[in-house]
Length: 528
Image 1 (spheres, rainbow, N blue to C red):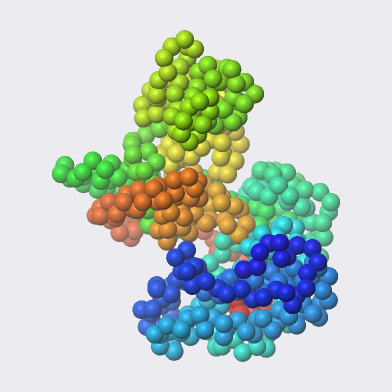
Image 2: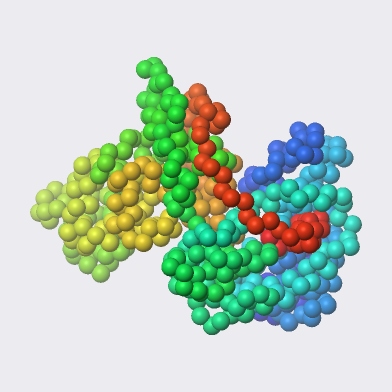
């Protein structure tokens, strides 16, 4: 894919060479041919696999948007995009020169077209353009979208109203209350122009969805109390598992707990005990996300040892270096009197290592990680020293060990609110984990990326997004080993667990819009 710099400022379309799609991307889940080679029936192509042509489609759309920004005429943009679009299917076919039957190959190509459907909408972000670019020119191209993609020989993709669009951002549901995630959430007028009203909705405000546009790209919102706000982009908003009333009604424990064999190794027994406490809710979320239960249990094992929750004494870890970053830089003498961390004041190692503490500046330094009573002692001292907000922001908490500094990402308004919720009930731990995995890597084109990594068992990628890149390989290996142990447990099948009631279906698309969308799916680049 072209570099971000290619698309900034004035550009000459002739200089934009179509990028080669590297087959090594298969290792990152972009080209999953190895999972498709045994497909005998086109209907059996896995619905969750990434698009073979997604990078190519995103590049086409990004090129068109960039050309519009640079001042290219509407006719030139359409002509260029159309030429690239018609070439897409043959390019995909060349990519898959593997020992497949023609029927299998047709199924793969059709599938690639179907699930590339979000490429047009999110392409500026995929090439690292400012999100405002999409806002400025999407309407300019949208009116010509079908003109660009109609009429080419894209193969025989049936008009299937049951196509699974595999959306990163779920369809808006009227009446849902969601949170404003974008710091630049512009308030807009109504259709068809959706013109800016010159004001923004504050980030983290809660809003109620009252109406959605035909293509679900915009929603009309009000305050939870009913005061009208206006229209805004759907991508500006997001919901939380923790606020789902159906999940709130699901039993935390599974109806069929595991019988734990005394001969099992301690690690396997710890994972089984975690399932016996939390498996009911994990299964309910599995029904929504498709994430294997052993994968979630693996995270619990590595993050907190699978230890049982005690009310008011959730597993925590106090991070000295975070206290230094938040407070110690401005109070170096006071920090150095009671705290140490790697890379500071002559202490060796990385910042997250070699943490020591002493309440009395004249006392000997002591380690405290690995002993919960000591972790709480350090936290209590820090709360007196710097106050609740800064001290609580320096701890990770619960089974998934989420930093309280990430409270906003998982739907809590204050550090104390998240701390109290995690101290009260492991339900908050499970829901908080899935909410964190929704938004930790972004809220637009990378929304739910960690959920996809976990579902595909991409351990190193998940580790990098969840805990940072510093120890991603080692952490990924540990997760893979814990997963193997969890997968060896005789877990009851999902059918043995009561699933939450299904959400009401979204408002159906009109026949005209559905027909247009399915026709554009022949390329896979229509806006979702």
